[in-house]
Amino acid sequence: MRDSVSPQTDRPLPRIGHHTLPNRVILAPMAGVTDRPFRQLCRELGAGLVVSEMVTADSRLWHTRKSRQRMIHRGEPGPRSVQIAGGDPQMLAEAARLNAEAGAEIIDINMGCPAKKVCNKAAGSALLRDERLVADILGAVVAAVDIPVTLKIRTGWCAETRNAQRVASLAEDAGIAALAIHGRTREQRYTGAAEYDTIAAIKQRVSIPVFANGDVTTPQRAAEVLAYTGADAVMVGRGAQGNPWLFREIEHYLRTGREHAPPSADEIASTMGRHLRALHEHYGDYLGVRVARKHVGWYLASHDPSRAYRSRFNRLEQAEQQFEFLHELFRGDAAAIGNGIHAA
Image (cartoon, rainbow, N blue to C red; front, side, top):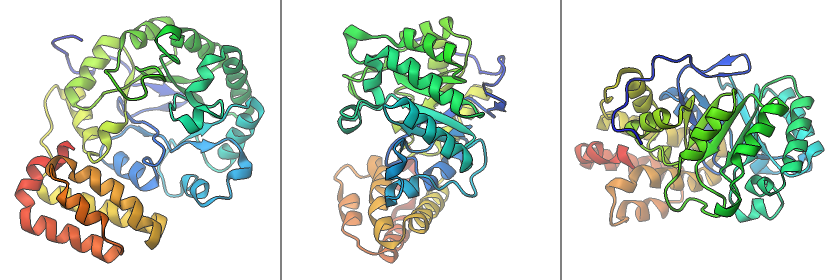
């Protein structure tokens, strides 16, 4: 990684089809995380593009509550990017077509998820083991819709079979509009450090926009990754959990070379409250309480080494109790929360 990095203001902003992104920081799709409330919050706080949770390509399963909630995009500003996952070219093509009809403006194909339940169905990063199938899927989906199609991959299935460069060439040949690469193999899942040499090599190999993903947790790291790889944008995943302010901090640092002030205690309290309310409105009282435990837990993580706050919050069973918890938390220790919680 380079020691010094200049502001990222000397290159054109990335384009996906006819969509020009407003900056170089993107929210990665994450199952169980990038739901509509979180996407909207991250966009408000500076994400130039947000990508939905992955939706199964099997439309016969879209009647489930989980699938229906993942497909809600009303009121979201564009471009609306919807990620689809599966292993059958025609099923993925049909899923892309149906999502485009429902308002998607970008279709993203998942070939990066390392989850066992996804890979066991020959989907996600398991597809990287069959380059012929990869080519068939990409060709079918691109042909099925008249909106841009993007692709998310890893560097390969394992260290011995890193084939991301070949897959990148297949993607460009198929008409994929942009490529996101997580700098780990499927075998690594989320362990070890992300490597960026593969991403740099792919950027030299293809002419389509390339987005670098993996371990982008600070503005400084984002700038270093962009400088080292030549990528057109960084994609932020786990680093945004409990820290949606990271997007504006990265955007500000890339544009000016200076650090953005951290959120104040008042802003943290307001943001957490808005996020909590949006979760309850989206999921309803019963499921909203349970989904909120995960998100509030991430917000609290860096300020709660003993897990006492999180343990107490997780025992709450009603929405009103969760709101009262936040009210008491910030009333009692607002200054300390402001000094630590944003770094979760």
